[in-house]
Length: 485
Image (cartoon, rainbow, N blue to C red; front, side, top):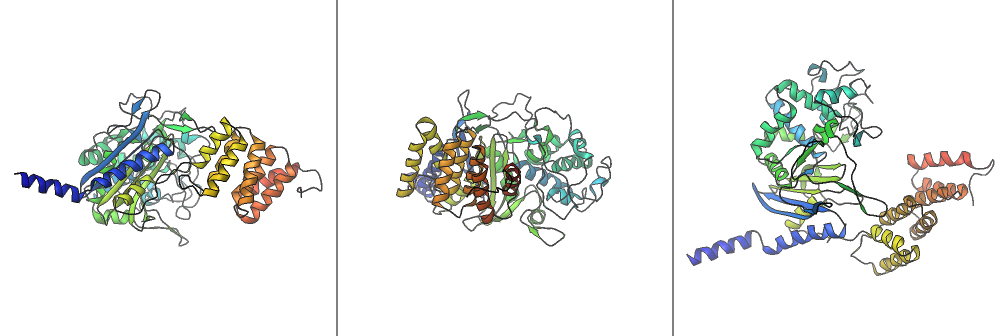
């Protein structure tokens, strides 16, 4: 008996070494800490079994609620993959034709200049517009049904001839949900529950009704220019349930991923059709299929999946079919320079040499400048650069972000110093000159502003932002004076 137990323990050790568990936990814990995030939740599933999960930090800062197994995060655009799988189930049943005119299913939509298809809705090539103004953060309109959400944009003309352009459109996915309702006889919510959530035992996943009491729902956050947490804007997601309004947990998303890997939700040939490049009418190939992205990750492994970025949340699921492995991460803060944690933990588990999480240099410099002085911040930056301190993210983008933090805080002259130091350190970085131009413009020096913006234009000749800034500044200069030398 003792021998059998020892052999079993030895098998566990060999199949999943403790040091791998330790590294995975350490990575997530340090990533949350070094990037000052409320929480990072992540997990892996392999060969039909959840092998590791980690819940680090707080799902609710105000009430000191720790992130946990049952914490529900807004998964944002991962919702598109769920909706796409629902559509493809009905394609398999012969109830939907991918290349059929959408008006065959939704005849109440006004006639457009061009026909657009179900396939084009899935691949973001339908001509349906993207968000405008503050629609992404809608808090004023509560739609009572999917059809109401469609009618909100139904009279809009198409932005372009379908099939000629790729334009990522969350609003287009509302039409897919209505098609599901029309051909299945079920509400979109009920269809997902019956045909996706129940078969995969995704017992916690649901639509994110902001006005309902939903136990275990994590709160979303953002950071201000002082790099302090703020509550993310309230958003009524009835405008985009099918494309960005699902709540889920790490384990549920792992089960969804596994459902794809194991062909439990759709057939392999159906999945393969979803993972085919979209080809525009001019022959241009887009690395996006039908509700799924795909490719080769930076470690050389083939994957498919989807990222999400909503009000206060970021998310990712990645399936590695050659490894029968899937990886998920959920973060309840939308912020700059966040990396793909799901990709990193999959690589770490697979034995790759993964770079340890680093501190944000921009955040550190902003905190030093606002609590001590700009001089102290610039000295700290110089010392970090000299030592090539590998504990920090050392990039031009980090310094650019620091400069814009200062601009947002109305510390214009400090921003000029930061951007000047950046452009002196790297005269080939156009965004440094753009920042310097904007800082001088804010300071009232139009001549120097134009000078640096034109330097940026030489490095980045087709940049629309630079062109617009130049056009705005040139008329404000005295006659005959184009820039300050």
